[in-house]
Length: 283
Image (cartoon, rainbow, N blue to C red):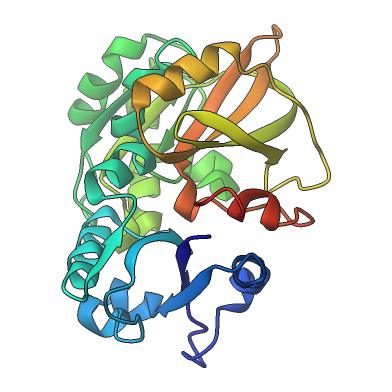
């Protein structure tokens, strides 16, 4: 069994964050090693402090924890390397799976048509910039997000665009998304054509190109479904990253669509899933 890094409880750094406690027990029960990082220190820019509890010379490790911005993930990799510890998922692989521009080409045709542009936090885009960005999408509805996350809980204000042909309205939604994301804006602005879906969403976990587990989506843990993976498997192979997730749902015409891809190290398991079903595969 491998060594797995987990986030420490922010109030008691000597123990695992409660959200990941069952996963850490599964690793230990399988004979693996658990080490802890201080996620708050990492996000604050103190990567060396974040890994000070990680024993030296552990060798290769996986990570299972809260999301980490790509830049901070690179700092984490460097700080661990200085202690003789190597992340099994390097920063380039993490970026490719975690941020939409890294995975979109591999899933082109299986996921809604999308455009994006790099953008800095705290600066609202003007109407002209937004109109130029979305022009390739034509008309119709769309959704707005950053490279990693959306503001779906502020659907009307900062996520859903009723009509792309109204650049003023599109710019208003994009600006609100950028404002609400604040300093957490990841990478830039993403606009995706809106597709109507029907039924539950499934999360598929892939290790070295093979689907090792299918679960419900964490937002709907009681709703399980078995998606058709025929086309998705080839796309995951094209992506070529070690440990990834794909969230799939049926479009209203019956086609299975990839809603999101991600680095599986920071993808959440839904409630009720035995974590050993996933973590026992991390060898």
